[in-house]
Each structure stands twice: as C-alpha cells, then as structure tokens.
Amino acid sequence: MNDYNLPDEAVDDDLLTADDDDLLTEPEGDESRLYEHFSVTVDKGQVMVRVDKYLFDRLPNASRNRIQKAADAGWVMANGKPVKSSYKVKPGDVVSVMMDRPRYENEIIPEDIPLDIVYEDDQLLVVNKPAGLVVHPGHGNYRGTLVNALAWHLKDNACYDANDPRVGLVHRIDKDTSGLLVVAKTPDAKTHLGNQFLRKTTKRRYRALVWGNVEQDEGTITGDIGRNPKDRMQMTVLPDGQGKHAVTHYRVLERLGYVTLVECRLETGRTHQIRVHMKHIGHVLFNDERYGGHEILKGTHFAKYKQFVNNCFDVCPRQALHAMTLGFVHPVSGEEMHFTAPLPDDMAHLLERWRTYTSNRTAADTEA
Image (cartoon, rainbow, N blue to C red; front, side, top):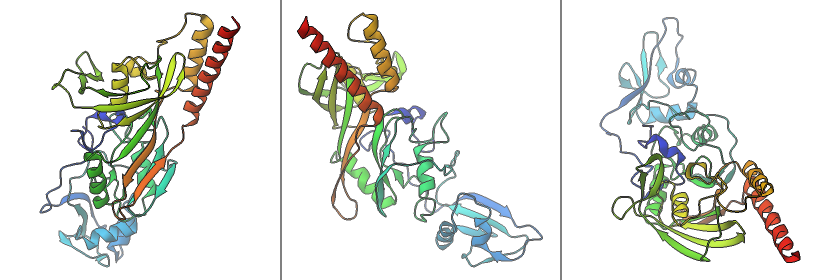
C-alpha cells in the first residue's frame, strides 16, 4: 500500500476521482494525538540559536517559513513542550517536530522536474501532464513523479505540505495518458473540488484514437467495471452488480479507415474506464499494450501496411489517450473555470500519419 491508502496498481489508473471507492481522500488523523516526525538531541558544543534556524539547517525539505508555521501550531517541541520559533536551543535539548498525522513510510521528496502549468492561484493549480510521467509515488516509482515535481514547485509555500493528504491531487490520470489535472493547495480547496467530482459536476473530455471504424456517430457505454478475474493487471466489464457502475459517452470526431478518433466524456471515473469501455464495444485504444491495442487489429496483411502501423507505434509509443479539457467551479470565487490542453506532439503526428495513409488509399481506390 502507498501513502494514500490506494492499491499500488492505482498509479496506472486512467482516472481516479471522488466517485470511486479508491478515492484520493484519506481518513482524518486523531487531532488529540501528535506523531513524531523528527527528533534530535542538541550537541554539547552547540551555540544557542533560534529553533527555527536550527531545524531549517537539519530538515533539507522544509522551508523556514513552514517550520515557523509548525511552531505557531504547537508542533515544534523542546524537551516535550511546545516552543515558539524564537526559542533558543541549548546543548542537551531534545528538539522534535510533531504533527497530527503519522509519518509516512515513504516521504515525498521535492524534485526539480519541469511542470507545464496551465493555471495557478493561491488555491489551486492546473497542470498539463506529459505521457510517461507517473502521477503519484507507488510500487517501483517512489521518485520522479508528478507529486515530487509539485513538492518542489510549492516548496516555499508554507501552506502546502506534499506529505499532507489534505492537499494535493484531487484526481489523476495514468502514467501513459497525457493531459489536464487539478491540484488543490489548501484543504478547503481539495474538499470543495473533491465534492464536485463526487456530484459529477466537473467537465472532462478526452481524445482517443481507437482501432476500427466506430459504427455509431455517438453513443453511451454503460457497464460495471471491476478487476478481470483472468488477468489481475486488467479491468473489465462485469455482470451487473459485480463491479462499479460506470458510464462513458463518446462521439466520433474523425474516421480514418482502420482507426477512429473519438471524444469521450466521463460520467463516472473508474479505473481504466475509457480503455475498458472502448474495448467492450470492440474498439481497443491504439497502442494500448495492456489491453491488446499494440497489435495490428484492423487492416490488410500487406507488409507495407504492417510497416506503416509499426512506424505509427513508434511515433506514439503509448495508448493514444489525452485528457483534453477540464472544467470545474473555483472553490473560493465560484467562477466557472475551463481549460484545454492541445494534443501532444506524439498524438498529433500519429493522426497526421493516418490522415495521409487514408488519403493515399482513397486516391488509389479511385484510380483503380
């Protein structure tokens, strides 16, 4: 289990939102109890110095401002008693930092990883995540994640603690899915945004390239989603009552012969929902290795076509899925917020290749 009480495989979720049982919220700590996060006995030769300065020199991932805030909250102790930032430590003092939640097994370390920030204010930020970036530390991915990058970006924000589950990610997308995510900087913002996901009032639209010619111009897929009993790495549509209720609305945007570009609108947010639902109606996402989309599922047997598809796999070496739009109500101002992230280069180039192939094939058929 990771620090957010989510199954480790959840780091590969297309989307985990507040209407999922694996919600990105956590049980509140016992406010009457404090937990030790750091403790040190002051050396005999230590000169007297303010406790905030003393701790700042010893806690590489904490700003002095944040230490002062902790002291104001009564969480900085000297010999078992709360002290203010101005307290002068003395040789032999036992200085400790206590908090109202247990220490995590794997502390989130700030890392200087570039972020594509679409919007930011004092309550939240919206980030455009690239494909290949894991969202949250988990089994096999404890460093180099989006959460580590956010911890670095907000390291001087005294109100944001990357290890505090009351702030941070409100939802998330899979490692190999690109697109928009909203991050809460304050507990109130996270609660407010989480409730919007719970009430299904957020607006989320995805672009996906799928195998095959989708017959209907638009439609709705309803099917309970749960773990595939034959392959625990996959989710699947299960008989009614055996999984979690899930609804996906889709609309065809462009037909490209053996593949189709669709827009998907999520009504629920289940694990791998788009990938599972599109497979359920016979249209696996292009190059989705987990669900078989990395095989040539439609088209001819000609070697030239196989080479073309393999080149497409190289151009977009992940499932062709992008969280393109995100809308919600600002937790403080009440303003309707709406953001769009254009298709990343790999998907844009992939579509251009299919357009060229389809155009050439149509021209050849016409000449024949």
